[in-house]
Length: 465
Image (cartoon, rainbow, N blue to C red; front, top):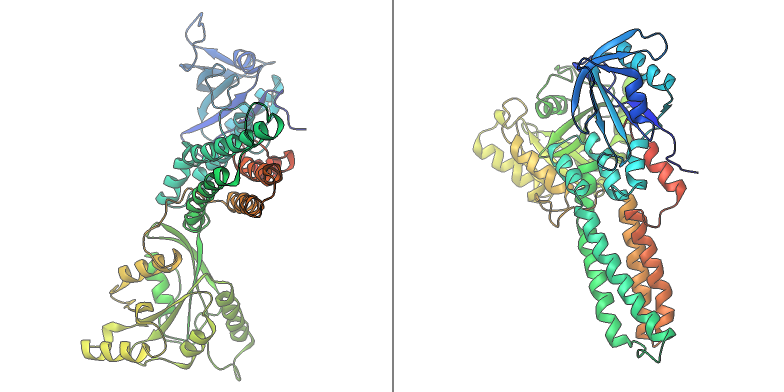
């Protein structure tokens, strides 16, 4: 059973060498543990909440000085967890922090589990569950846009919408209950009264779901694969997008024999960009090249967007035509590379040729050598990722598949309640579906979530958070 009775401690900063490393302690015994371990230089200190003090950290039994540090006590309920919280701001480095943490445990604290500080913040009412999940999203954000979306959720952007939906659902349920159970005090509600309210609830849910795809992409990222024949410039394009010499580029056919993966920020989207071995006839290839081509095909099949690269000087090759025939899903862009070798008339002729096989808006002339067309390519990737628009579209308050599925269940329950009322069933029959909708919404905010789900969510947090 999840409890928050113990006093817990953990290192709250990343492992490694740094200027400052923080030990966090939370629980009823935090002030006592702090007084045991920390000796302020200022004599006769009366600890004030949220004020830093300079002093020494000592072992509780031997009195050996472990570090010179700053300490702060944050008294309940004015702390992250709403418990008594103490922090020791030590010099960064694994040896110092390990010794200080061991001293905290010797003084009576227990080592915190992953995400336990944030779980306590949730259990003590400081955060809703979706806000608690936003903490992990903010820590793990790979782009500034992902960080902004996580911060918006942490500050209550989603929970305020959910609160409004839950209040309206409860109001409808209360109206049904009063009308059915106490007919002498109120008339039973009729379908004409309830249906507009249910339609409005479904409309609000639809608005949230409309931004879910963009939100999840900003949070989770996208797999984008460069594919095509040998020597069309896939590796050069990878290097240009990464702005680093990551892949080896040579005139030798088949220089890339494995899938090279790198993370990159494109237009605010976190992408996993993959360079693949050139696709060609396999009759007389060495075993390593054969395996490389098979891995390329597997990467294309698993990709969310495929960039089909061609040599503009040679035109549309067999590999590109085959890929165009195979990649209706996932979506693809056709890249006319090496435009630096073509004049304007030749480029236009190639584009007209390519338009016979691919929509013109999905064809992008580029030059990996000069960088021409790269900004247009980035915009096109974003457009493909967001389903046809380079903008995020509806406000992406949802970025989590758990939230998305819960809203789908809530919408399904509301649909069934509408259907029951439309065919003339009593309102208390529809109330069963409305209860299910409320339960589904509560799984997002945490009001109705089970212990197993909580444990799974917080197990994915880092230690010390």
